[in-house]
Length: 269
Image 1 (cartoon, rainbow, N blue to C red):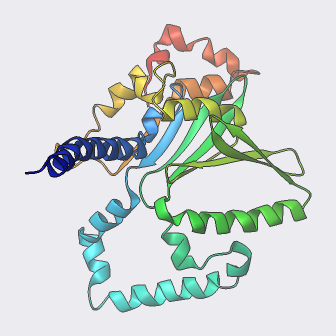
Image 2 (image 1 turned 60 degrees about the vertical axis):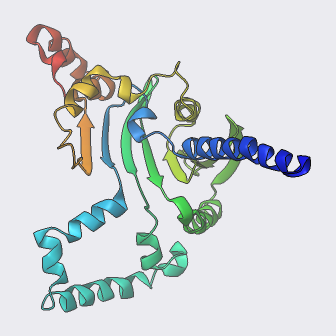
C-alpha cells in the first residue's frame, strides 16, 4: 500500500465518524420538545393531540373506524364528505385551499392552551405541527392578511430569538401573533409569550415549563396509559388558578378568599 492510499483511508476513518456525529446532532436539534415542555409553567388549561396522523390511523382500527370502512357504509360516508366538499367550494376562494388540503395540514402534535398573561386576561395559544405542509399554511395566512388589511387591520414583523414573528392587529385593537419553527406553527394572542416560548423551545434551563409544574405532573402520572399504548388525546385544567385569573376582580373575589380554609385551593384538574 503506497503512502497516498494509506493517507486516504486514514482520512476516511476520521472524517466518516465526524460526519455521522454531525448528522445525528442535526437530527436531534430538528426534533423539538413536546408542548408541555414549551408551554409556561402556569398554563391554566390545555387540550393536546400527540400525533394527529397516528390518531387517525388508530381510529381506523377501532370498531367505529372499521364500520365507516364497511362496504355498506363507506358509500354513505363518501357521499356525506362529497356534500361537505361541495359546500366548501363556495368559500374556497376566500380561504385559499380546497378542503382536502386543509385536512392534511396537521401532521403531528396539535395543542390548544389557555395561559396566564401577566396581570391581563389569559392568552390563547395554538400549536400545530405542519412539517412539509407549511406552504398550505402560508396560503391560508395570505388570504387572512388580505382580509385583515382590507378591513383596516395591520401586519408588522420583528425578530425574537432569531425567529421572524408576525403581529396582526385588527381595527379594534385585538392582536394575534404567529411564528413558525422546526415545522411547527404557533399562534397566540400575546406577543409577551413568544420569547419565553422560544427559550423553552431551545431547552433553556432557566425557563420553567408546564412539564415542571407539580400539579400537572401529578395528574398526568395517572393518565399515562400502558407502556405500549400512550394516550393520543390528553387534557388538563387548573380550576383554582382559572378562577383566580378570571374571577379575581369584583364580587367573585370574595369566594376565592374561602378557597384555602375549605381546602379547595388543592383542587386539581
